[in-house]
Image (cartoon, rainbow, N blue to C red; front, side):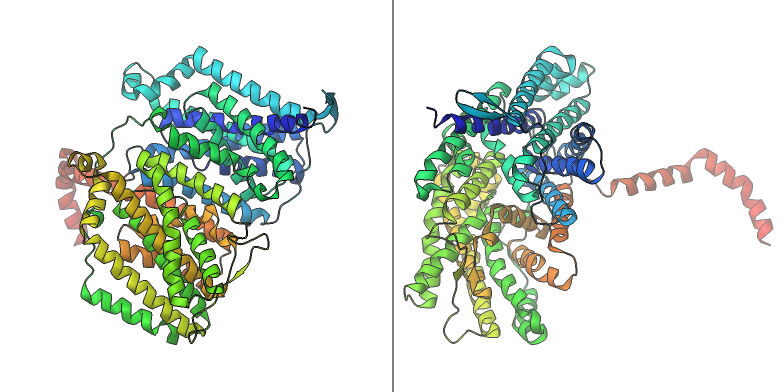
Length: 633
């Protein structure tokens, strides 16, 4: 037992921080019905704000902590509340993309301002230790445990004993009734978002000294609080707190086991996501549902197969063919764009045609790239290896379709996001994928090794994939997928098995994404896991929403936006990520008419017309008319 005690102590400390972050996440989920994917980015922003005020501005650390937690966190909470309230009756994909866009904007902005390298985060809590059962416990660990415990108890008492807390619980059940009783639901939701963001900022401040200052690492680690929230079924604060402790202890104990079993070295960081995935898939009926009515949306782009005009197709085809002759040294970015267009086409098939939100699409492309390396290395001819690569990726698509059969909306997005992170942490460093060296060499087809020749290979494969997708859309399966996006219940009542359609569309999407990943590796003739991380999946979903609901046009526009346009700009990659995030939020707000951009102009026009036709204006014009005419003479 003495061998396990240090790991248990460490697990309780880290689990307490997970619990603290998860409490804020569950609070905002309960009161707004929107899952905040930017929760980890809020935590990272709180940690950076604390570091800036304490280390760079010279404020005492208690004052810097108060500002970061009580000021910076709630301000971000207000922004999130406004965005999510505006999107209250928008489609699920738009509400997901809005918080994902805020995540990308915050993470990119922090990386741009402070650099991508991890900075040392000096400890601010006491670093001494004391004995407990034969092991040493840090005072900073004890403080983290006590802060999380105080936060859990205080929040529970606040929700049960205060008028505002009771109103926070009531706003979930019936917001209009709460409004009739004289309490503004918007004010209550705003307060809950401020408290939730403050909890996230506090978790970032506490965990910063253990990790260092790294925007991506801080964001990803706080995302592990998703597992604790899942144990609490995104509703129970006590269970969420216990879940945070359980996740922390289990991860720490698996770390001890992994020290003796190198094959599972990547498993400990993935424990929270195993928990998340298991709870979502095994207990879907126990998860809270969003009771609010949604505004019906008519999507002409997905209610019928796209029918581009012949002239447009000819123009695009000619432009694509002449690209190598006019872009010069920038041809590699157009090659990358052609490969990415195939990946975006596969993602758009899920999002726009079938109405499914997948946040693990980068994993499909990664499996395709790794499988292509193994196939070509085994002597399989290049084009046959490319086809087999897609087939190898199909079982992974079928596996991801399992939660899609049992889940929908935000919970499907959560399950796929957790699956993507788990897949990266467990498999990317193995010999099956990219190894610990994180590098694989990808060949080009014989006779097409030059950039221009390989570009035309990419173009040909992309054109064939588009024809294949067009055939699928015009088939019975395409009609079923469009009906699935409109109303799965109506499809079921007609005697159609929804699970078969879901499985097929995920398999087709994985097939195309796997081929796209293999082609993308051929652009640089080398691949590594960094290009297929889970945050790439978030970025791709945000970009596909920016590109619009037209499947083929959107795939091309998204690929150009990610691969080609940045090469013509001097903006740093970090600022580009921030820009993509901000544009994704704007697109989500405007897509379903959540923000009516014409309203101010209509108000101004209406007011102007009222002034022009008012009796006072008419009498004034009548009296001043002769005077104005005389003055004009």
